[in-house]
Image 1 (cartoon, one colour):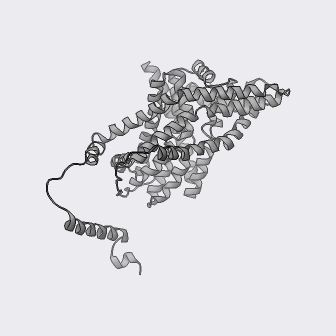
Image 2 (spheres, one colour):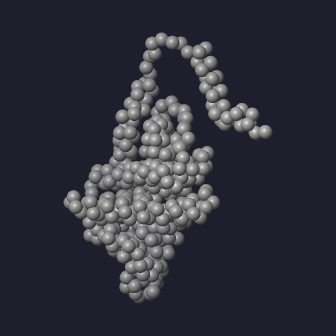
Image 3 (cartoon, helix red, strand yellow):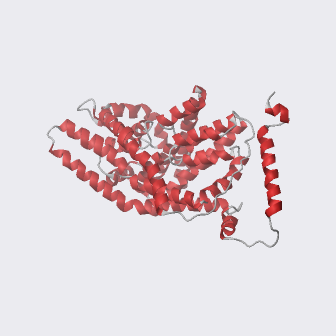
Length: 427
């Protein structure tokens, strides 16, 4: 006979009831009733947990986070770009033109174009670490849970979704903590809509090409906000159609407020940032060489007639309504390897060096509205191969593994098209 049969109801419910009975008994013995003196923690919670102020405060903190990351990283991006330019010039002494092109254009040009964005990525992780270490992120989870629960997301979904801001792979793996199968599937399927760190170089590049640093930080913030909003909307639709059911309630403990330490925040920043550096030394290096090869062969052919050109022209008809030509199309296809590869591919295909040069090229190729549509498309379309593989491993289902990329690509095209149409009508 099972425990549930003996108790007559779910054992977890019984345990929860008993737990709160004991808590009530302890409170009766220890609680001193009377006029309570408000602590600084109480006053902060009065604002941060307020049902009307909580969400605006959370959004304000996120906006300040990206403003801090982009404004602070400018000088460091210039230093990295200068160093990469010097490194590329050092290899010109090699007499073999093929080898020079491989090293300078494929490795240093492509990979270096991504490494330039290390400063904003690290400063973003630093800001997130400070918010976590202070105890605020737990409050944000509490505030956001109110909305997520009403729209079909389990309260435990917030942590996997938050991890998705760093990388969707650990975010999806963290869904194992969600007990209900439908709750877990919904969270897995919407997690790739969270804007991972790999997309940040694309945002910074495109936003910096059209807007000032202050305006660009607001545009980048809007991409993260759009991802969160669409994740909740898609979760609601899934709950009403394919994965019906009510999400389970979530009880969480709020940690005390603490003053973040420089050492702790830097360590947490490094732990997240190191994953990006590790990817740069492996996947992105290999991807840069692959893109260079496809953009260089057949030898002597114009760029449009290379293998990269053929790939770009194959997808161009689908992307032309969005204002993207074959070069943007090829870069988006290469972005299936990893979203940072979009920047690598653009640098190699446009045959320019440095962040300033590729920004100027983007500004000459696209309009600001088309640039915004490109950012939206990168946010939403097929996740990288690693994410798709993780979805397969966590769901053990080809149906859901294929469903995710398909619905995301359709959603990406529709949202980008709306940006172009509405933006063109307004402006």
